[in-house]
Length: 101
Image (cartoon, one colour):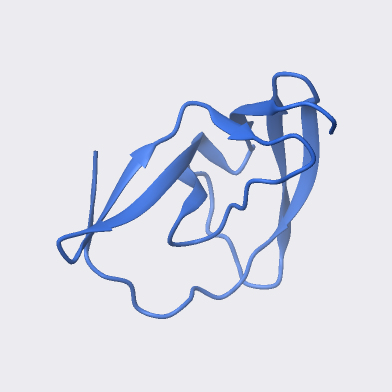
């Protein structure tokens, strides 16, 4: 949009809890922590992807299978809820060990 917006939450029926997280590598160890608010610049975007900012699904209610998809709702301050469909893909290559903060 023409104004800065903020992603303040994510929801999905596939998990008990769904959060925005950020991964970083510190001293060769990947650390991960929740991001409560993600600012999206005016006319820009914020990329969610493995190894950086991503959506964390905790307490999956069932096994997700490669090739299927499921609904996810992104909740923004100004845009409100945005419903998207997430494809389940094969996990990427090996990542360094990680810990949660």
